[in-house]
Length: 156
Image 1 (cartoon, helix red, strand yellow):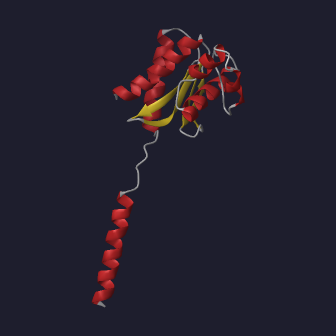
Image 2 (image 1 turned 45 degrees about the vertical axis):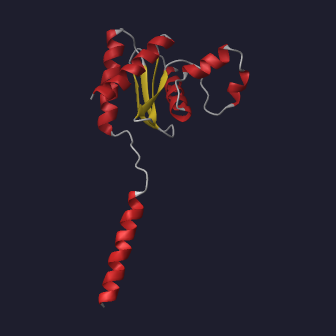
Image 3 (image 1 turned 30 degrees about the vertical axis):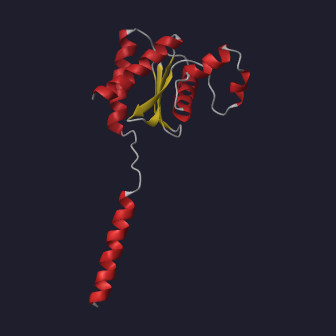
């Protein structure tokens, strides 16, 4: 009986050691999303623009989507595509626009490509947690609104 208890204790200890070797993954929780949205909305109000804001997880799944009353209906899909590109490719959506502007047409063959500025990856400690995008204003303003959302999260 004592040997059985010892074996069970040893097995438990080995399991805990193995589990501690597993990497930990951060994710966007509701508090983080609300913080980013509040900062992005404040930037949009400051610039007096009506935009759609979208936040996706690191796999491109929509976590948050909000269309301002005055934003066009197409901004819903544009914001999603910009955010998804940023999350999946772990770089700003402007990167695809820059490649296309240089004549690199092969970029259009990649899945989930959206060559339009306004989407940014959400990175914490070098890990991409998702993407945030805005759509409805000039592209550089859309990106500034998305950046304000990220800045709001990082300042928290």
